[in-house]
Amino acid sequence: MGHMVELKVVRGDITRQDVDAVVNAANNRMRGGGGVDGAIHRAGGPEVLADCIRRFPDGLATGDAGWTTAGSMPARWVIHTVGPNYSAGERDRSLLTSCYRRSLEVADELGARTVAFPLISAGIYGWPKEDAIAAAVETIAAADTTVQEARLVAFDQATFELIRSAVGQAQ
Ligand code: ADP
Image (cartoon, rainbow, N blue to C red; front, side):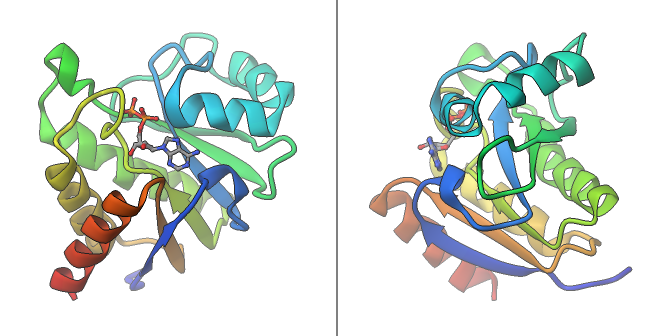
């Protein structure tokens, strides 16, 4: 493949992004949760949970990714990935970079060309924000994928500024 992904940074709500797929920072159970997971299930409606139950009866491993419908969101698919829970002592960085790599692999399988990512593990799971940003930016930039645009979605202005400066340094 050998494509270069265009990395965009936006501030906003990931559930409202007009992209082919939105990535969810899910948990191992895959039955919904707080943070961006809760927002995605609310915005997508009950079809998202129904599809999670059907497709992930045993949940999903940390670092892995898989897809469901996006229900009533503008996106067509949700790519669920489970970041390491730093607060609970899961501090293997390769599990965090795996989330981005596996999500892009699933996007390739789906034929998704535009994908929006939240900052995985950087909320409830407590991964230090600057390193969570570095992991996201370096892994997306190095990926061999047919995805054309990866959009990193920051929920707040401070995170948006931090991501923008990290992307600026990487380019
Ligand atoms: P995790 O459990 O992996 O830490 P969280 O959902 O708690 O996941 O947080 C991941 C990131 O997503 C945080 O930076 C948080 O501020 C952000 N976030 C929460 N809700 C939304 C949303 N609706 N759109 C985009 N980002 C969001």
